[in-house]
Amino acid sequence: MVNLLQASNLTISYKTADGEHKVLDNVSFFIGKGESVGLVGESGSGKTTLGLSVLRLLPSNAVYNAGSIRYNGSDLLAMDEKSISRVRGKDISVVFQDPLASLDPLFTVGYQIAESVTAHRPDIGKAGLEEIVESIMGDVGLPEPSRTKQLYPHELSGGMRQRVMIAIALVNNPSLLIADEPTTALDVTIQAQIMDLLKRAKQEYNLTILLITHDLGVAFELVDRLIIMYGGVIVEQGSKQEIFSRPYHPYTKALLMAIPELMDIAQHAPPRLSAIPGSVRAHYDDYEGCRFYDRCTYRTKECLDKEPDLTEYSPGHPARCIHPLL
Amino acid sequence: MSLIRIQDLKVYYTGHGLFRKQSVTKAVDGVSLFVNDHETLGLVGESGSGKSTLGRAALLLIKPTAGSILFDGVDIVNAAVHKNRPAMKKFRREAQIVFQDPYGSLNPRMKVGKIIADPLRVHGVRGRKVLKEKALRLLELVGLPASAYDTYPYAFSGGQRQRISIARALSIGPRFIVADEPVSSLDISIQAQLLNLFKEIQEKEGVSYLFISHDLRTVAFIAHRVAVMYLGRIMELAQTKELITGPLHPYTKLLLSSIPSKDRRTTDQKEQANGHEHGCVFYPRCGLAKDICMDISPDLKEVSPGHSVACHLY
Image 1: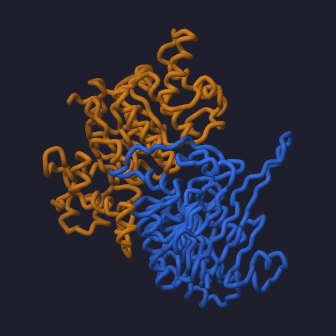
Image 2: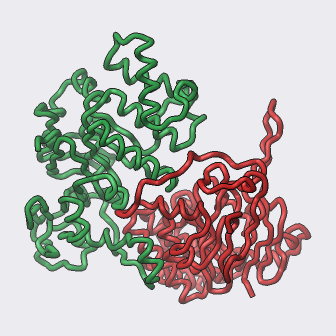
Image 3: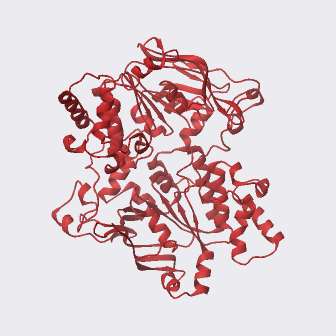
């Protein structure tokens, strides 16, 4: 498989009032063409920073300390503003969590979809543009495109707004879609609709997808491979079957245990859920050793000696742990 | 006897448009349910279902438009109207709430110890030593260090803040707690900690919960019985295991089949639509609707012991 995206040794910090804190520490990963990868972690894991760093959409206090992100061979971090804008929304698109905050309340949704087209094809004719807009709206399941395109964001439900966001993302036939918690703000029945839409889009548009989520259940439905993050580093990655059936890292295992299947709860009525004690630290700047140490049930004093390497315990399935659950 | 019994409760909001006709939103429309001593009733529904309004109305934080609420045998809607102070005071002491947002619900300028002890003071407990002792015991009960007593809320994470909220709710020894999405804003690993804590507290203190959540998995773990709400009405109510393994209402079935999991199949559902003027509120989205569903709203009726459903199919 050809790598569409390849991030190497990416280190990013945020400047804050009390100094610079690393949020990503030496992160490397790849996404093959046509593959869907899930980036899973809890708040503070750095998953959103990693996802948005690809399009250089980070806030102005972010500092790229080191590393590169290659898309089709060219380094996105080395590009000038003009070149990166040509990539945004054309080759790589993003769908954010909150569709209401991402859409402009003053313009009709049809206008906003059209804007995304004209940004990359300024010479397109009016008739052609209308046709493209209506056809993509139909594709993402927005009813009566010719009427719906004249509506403003506030006139649509949350699910419909997210369909508009997906239409904007897909209208230029991108090769990579970055979806940052695309269903988190939605009700569960609407979430199911949007997941189905993304699954269909993946087939029909031959999309490569990077799905950022805290929900392993959502990730399981859409992706082929999972990257698990904790405290700014990748702690484990592998195919979703591998991760779900035999996680190596105690964090991954604990995360899986914390979300039992509904039927298991209903049938066995467990007296307690398996929780992960403690919480993640704000940052690990002057820290050596394993970042999960405080919360791990398998820890030994060796875990504090140095940060464990990402070790490949089986082909394509590395974990950052010196006591893997083999 | 049930600790709290809600009968035909209605909460209607009237919208006043300047140029528009007055519109009425039926947030809660004729809900009846009860919660027993030491029991947890789960209340699930999507946004707009009226579950939070129902939870707040049950505590008289929102004034019901109609209906009655019997708490420990006393009609408190009546007590509030007739300014029956002793009855209201007892109710306020015995019924408490834990809110969803742990950032918006704690006063940033009060130390944690004062936040927790404040309800005690309000209800007439005096003496600095007594109050501090009680606050420290509560901190221990919810798994926070004693050092939290002299700290401000900003120093705590979301999960720890929810523990503070729980300690505050427990301080005056309530018998009934409305928990309104208390874990929804937390990370999964922290959610599990808090849900365990809610259970532990029920076992130790014997409180009853009305546990409101949009997440069926959460409710399945914590609740003895579950009520499913949709657009202001209860669609189905049953023992937790029965509701999940043998759901009857088409809406309950849709909810269950929407939960992301490795077994989920593509859902077959109609687009969301607003409530229906006359018939069943779920009619516009229902795949099994009959003619009668369009005109007549089904009542919640018991189809087997402890299992009620509001649907013309049964």
